[in-house]
Structures are given as C-alpha cells and as structure tokens.
Image (cartoon, rainbow, N blue to C red; front, side, top):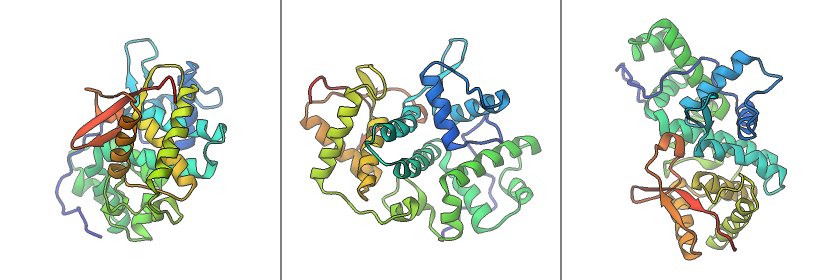
Length: 294
C-alpha cells in the first residue's frame, strides 16, 4: 500500500463535529424522523441526537436552515434515506442496502475530506500508530480535546464503512477504497463478486428507479436529487451482483436520461451537501425533474 503519511502536518477540511461519530442505521432512523418532521427519536438520549445531528451536518447529510430546528435533509441525506425505503417497497434486498449505505457514507467522506481521512487510515491501520502519535505527528495544531473529536469521528467512519478492515487485513491501496477511483475494489468492499452490467440492465434499473420516484418514494416534489436516483439504481444493480464505477455509471445514466427527455440541472450548491450526482467532464448534474409519464 502506498503510504501518504510522511510526518507532514495534515490540513483538514472537516470541522465542528463530535467524537461520538456516526452510526449508519441510527443515522437513517434520524434522517427519516427529520423527513417526517418529527425531529427526535424518543428512545435515543438527547445529547446523542444533538451530536449525531452535528456530525451528519459535517458530513453533508444535513443542510442548515434559518428555522428553529436548524437543519433539514440535503440531497446527500436523501441518498442515504432512500435505501431503507427501497427495502420496504421490496425493490432491493436488506443486505444489499446495508452495504450500499456504507458506500454512501464513504462517498461523503471522499467528497468532504479524503486527504485527512486517508492519512488517518494509513497511520492507524497500516502503520499501527498510537492515538497520541497520530496527534503529535499529523495533527499537532489540534488541542488534545479537538483531536479527540477528530479521532472519534474518523474512527467511526472507518469502522462503519469497514474500510479499516480492508486497509489492514486485505491490504487494499487507498485507490482500492476510494469510491471515485476507477481502481475501487468493489468486490472486496461489498463482500461479493460483482461485474459490469449490460447497458440494457442499467436502462431497466433506471426505469424501475424512476417509477419509484414518480410514485413518491421521496415525496411529491417535482425536482429531486440525482444522487438519490443514482443510489436507487445502484441498489438494483447490486441486488443482481452488478456494479459500475461512479464515473461510468454517471455518464451512462446521463445518456439514458437525455434519451428519455428527462430534464436534468446543474445546481450551484455545494458538493458537500449535494453529492456529485451525475457527473461528466467536470460538470455535476445534481437535480432531475421527475417525469410525469414513463
């Protein structure tokens, strides 16, 4: 594995989060409650919900608003929320959607602060550095308390996505766990052998996904996030042991949507909250218009 740790101080983009990190199933429950405007989970302590809300915001699953409650779901948040809804509608299997949720969280980290996370992984999982050594060598400008929060969030993402195991036990390179790399080791990450699907199957998966969005799986808004649509397509593909790298799938879905006359839009928002959506040639199409007829 090519190490990125060279004793240099690491500059990170992520800030303002808590060491309690992220728990993916709990995060999906919390996002569902927010989407239904319930805002709280009665069985979860208030301090845990407060910290989870802030951590989800830091990773781009929530966006700020001026209303009293402070946050609502972002496009990236809907890409995580759509998965249990697909299971409920029997569009995809629970096992597939669980592992795909890990992938969605990994993409968030890749978009928000990959350099910092990659250095952390190499130091912790490959070089077996102690927590204090990671602090002293890579994050010396952090106070002890700030580094404790940084360590906690990054460690939880590594554990929840299971990339710590892939880096440590399976000796995957950083490119092998980078969800946007053409060298992403999909079979290792998803735990089953996957192959490239025929274009006809992708077209069929897109039609099934558009049907779900038309029927209100994420509400009745005429404009919805392409990041969530792409996730729905990926869930159908993975249920049949198919997978395409992000760039390949994005280009193909763009082509198919244009052929069908579905309107797609570039959004001047932030990749942190929007995700990359469907992208090609450095252009990011993050919103699509739900077709009235299919």
